[in-house]
Length: 125
Image (cartoon, rainbow, N blue to C red; front, side, top):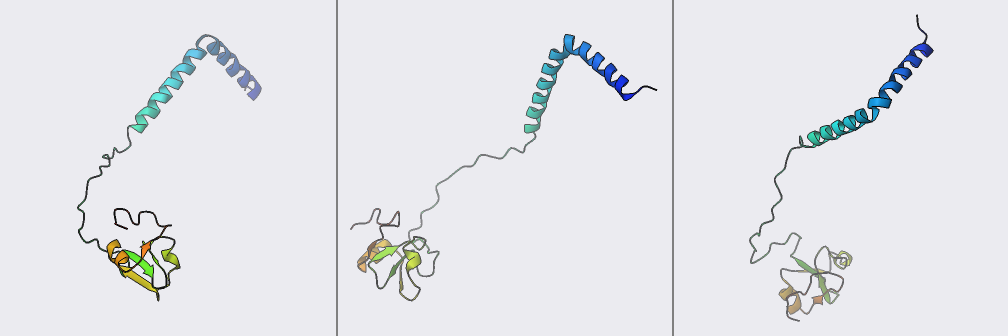
């Protein structure tokens, strides 16, 4: 019966002989084979259709997603905001005044809030 040390020496001796002559070629072949296999694995992923963005219909009277309309102001203030703007979060529900359009808010004497991007664009001031 051979000892573990003897078996280890025999394996090292055989590996040294193979590595001297064919080692580099074997390593290059195995790396190429592995790269090819990984490339084939990526082809197994389900291909999704590309995302396409299309124009949607523009509503003549947009529907509000908030309680009273698309714009909100405070009865004690002078500015109006979109409901998601920082200024609107400071308005209490008791003093909130809702408008369906910017022109309605401006007709009531309110001006666009400065910290609310997108307000007052395209409206006459």
